[in-house]
Amino acid sequence: MKDVFIVGVTGSIGTQTLDIIRQYNNEFNLVGIGIGNNIELGKKIIEEFRPKIISIKNKCDLNLSYQPEIYYGDEGLLKVASYKTEREMIFVNSLVGISGLLPTVYAIKARKNIALANKETLVVAGDIINFLVKEYNVSLLPIDSEHSAILECLKGENKNDIKNLIITASGGSFRNKTREELINVTKEDALKHPNWSMGNKITIDSATMMNKGFEVIEAHYLFNVPYEKIKTILHKESIVHSMVEFNDGVIKAALGTPDMHIPIAYALRYPNHEKINGSDDFSLIGKNLHFEELSTERFPCLAYAYLALEKGGIYRAVLNAANEAAVKLFLEDKIPFLKIEEIIYQELSNDKYKKIEYNIENILNISNKIIKDILERFGD
Ligand code: MN
Image (tube, rainbow, N blue to C red; front, side):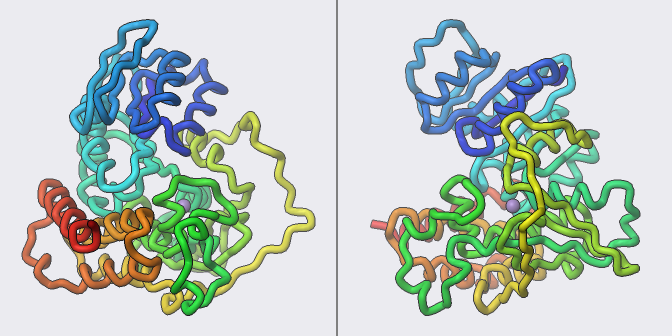
């Protein structure tokens, strides 16, 4: 039996993780959760699983049938992250954005194994997180279909044999549009992802291709592979979830239906491949697979991710913060779609961040400042 904690429990990844826990209720016990704004769903989850510790974004009265420990706000998330039990613990982080960073750090320090859907944690602080994972002797596994596929392809392989990691991209909601056609696209258009059903922020990140850029950074830290060896490829079917190319020319790929239950179960029960309830049988018969170059002219945000890696240090936090603010503005109808990449590039080009020392405290301070500044500049 393992004790599981899920922050961001009412979101897309959170609720799908609960499905896996329901199926394997003889293996997993839900001990702690973090709830955001969806109180109604949060309350249902609490009454079903009766976790011992709960954090809620804003103070509210839940009228529960039992008395768990309840905390609020950012502080509450950290309480859940640091909570300790006698058993092996797994911390599922499906928060959105930089807000996921500190909970991951606290969870590692409480010796929880990490199942990470909050890729921003690795984008802004991958090397620090890797250091902590080693120091506290915990595991870190991705809840991200591409990285789950790479993990699969690397099973039993020697790191020195890797020529390239090849991350596939569906192309997002605007893959068939030209740059001109992007000028007037709306939030509603952007939120219709053709292959995956996900939260709003990541769906916009997919449309701008910032998500793929983040995934390059994520892969760099997860697999400890130089970013020059991390490539991306457009694959509109989302059947090949990613690939590893070896020096002898062999390419291994992991294929399957685009269903996040699969990477979630893999992260929780690695390296197990048992049947997942409700997940359809998948057949390749009749399927056509296409692969095309992913153009950084068409999708400049992808190039910005490599630029941030090249600039190093705090610049990955700058990239993430500028994106976080810009996506928020777009979702509030305050800026047009193409302004997102413009805001990111402007911030990334600013040399004033060069002298800032790279550590968790500065990552958080700079991120909050950039987000606040950009929101003020374009907000009301
Ligand atoms: Mn992904």
